[in-house]
Length: 310
Image 1 (cartoon, rainbow, N blue to C red):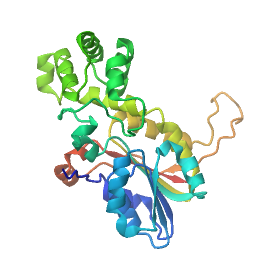
Image 2: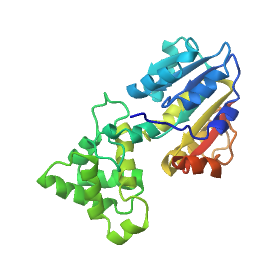
Image 3: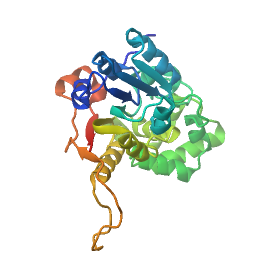
């Protein structure tokens, strides 16, 4: 089956990267290579570094970008390792970095990966298939307390405690091995009236488990700080998020990088030596137009924040 990926906020990203034809740019979440193709098409003597922890994504991206051989460096890694990645390539600084966070369309649509609550598959959800932790481990091995915490914090699910309780009770009888088996447990835990009124009952729990499996939130703040340090003066950092937890981290980290001082207010003089590293370009995040949402409904929750190295 041909799996398709539609790049979110594509025009807004390209415009805000301020691409120079001889610049060096990083796509930290290569995915379907939609953003990358637009970036590299604007380069003459420049270079694009495409990073993804998903081997299948890299394979697809190489095929899509085959006409730009020599201008693209493909790296199988996590963007959290941006410093070592650039160091290994002999690159000191870059002119722009893009992150498109969350799960990609072709990961959702590939039934074998276990990301979707609409298709039956093994409980997996690993973006890096070499990772030792999968959704199966979380669902079948985590304690009720840990499941409750994850589903509540990462999924912002009001029924987190009941869902965790039902999962733990279900696995007393047998392991929960597939996505649709998990969906059935979630449905039993959420009152019918609530299930009928809102979005798919599994959406928030699946999001929470995916975030836990891939450690998506715990790596984000430090990764942003590291990426900022890798930018040339005037270089842009563009980050697309898809839920409030990610967006909050990006917003607060941008604010931290903008500050000249982080000393307590009661101190008469600054002792922290903190220097401003980033100018915030988007005071409010950019969001998709109605037209984009109409042809790509998955873009509806996307937010783009942009910062510039000072």
